[in-house]
Length: 220
Image (cartoon, rainbow, N blue to C red; front, side):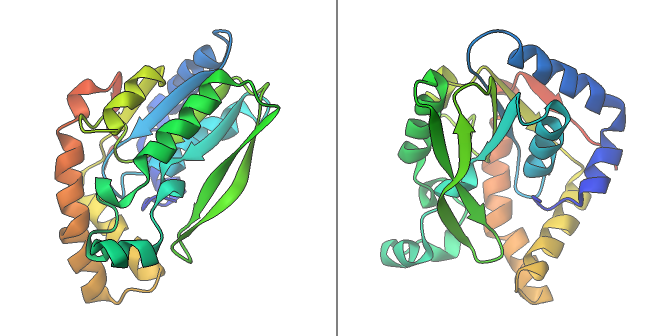
C-alpha cells in the first residue's frame, strides 16, 4: 500500500470507483495494448488505487506495474550521495522504467517481466511481475509520470491516460508517517522524513497536476 489503508481509500472514492473501473475497462477494450498511469504525491494511495482497479478488471484484462521497481539500490544511492533524498526523481532509473513501458507498449514478447519494489526490505526484486502479451491493459503507478524533466517527459508518448490522485493533505501526511513507522522508523524519524524529502517531492509532483487526464480527490 502507498500510505493509505486500502479501506480508507476505497471509502474516500466510493462514489467514483465504479466509474473509474468502467473508464479503465474502456481502455482495456479499445484494442491492442493500452497503458494507464496513476500518479500523485507520496502517500496518496497510488498503489492501492491501481490494485483496486486492476483487481476489479481481473488478471485477464489488467496487470499492475509500479515505477517503484526502478528505485536505485541503497548502495548506489550512497555512492552517488543521494541516500538522504531517496524518492526524488534522480534516485530512480527513469530510463529503465521508460524502456520497460516501451516494451510493454509493443507487447511483442510472450511474457515481459517487470521488477517489484518490496517496501519491507527497501529493495526491488527483478523479474517479479509477469505480464503476458495478451493482457490488454497495464496499470502503472508512480510519482513522476507527468514530470517535464528527462526522461520522465518521454512517458507521455507511451501512456494513454494519466490519473492524478489528490487526497486531503492532512490525511496523506498521517498515513505517510504511519507507513514510515511500519517500516522501521521511529515516530520522530518518520515525521521528519514525511515533512522533509517526501514533502519536497510532493510539492514538485503537485506542479504536474494540471497535465493529468483526470484528477481524483478522495474525501477526508
